[in-house]
Image (tube, rainbow, N blue to C red; front, side, top):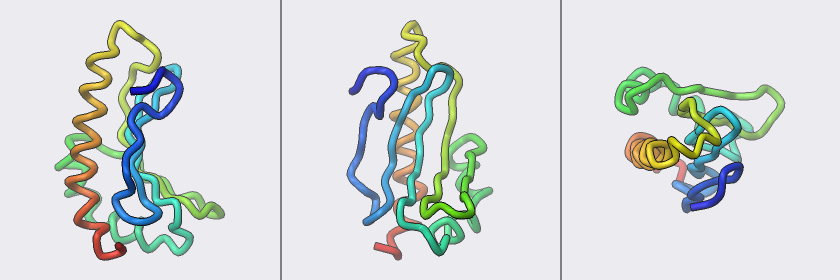
Length: 114
């Protein structure tokens, strides 16, 4: 695990051009599904169809982001906390739980793009 301010646990891509990352900022911890090659929004559009089901399975409302001129789309789980080391173990536990849930929910849905 890395120090605050960087990705804690980078993972292998779910599929080429799509990976999960966990990061921490001053006031929040995030688990992100990064679709780095999603210019045509096919991956985002395929996932957003199941948004309600995915949010329910993950256990929280996710942030679904697609910037107009950027190639990348991102889906994020966010938790308040950040650099508060007194909460470090709980933050790590939350992040690991979220990363596993992201793998379970997004992996099978993205497999067709393999």
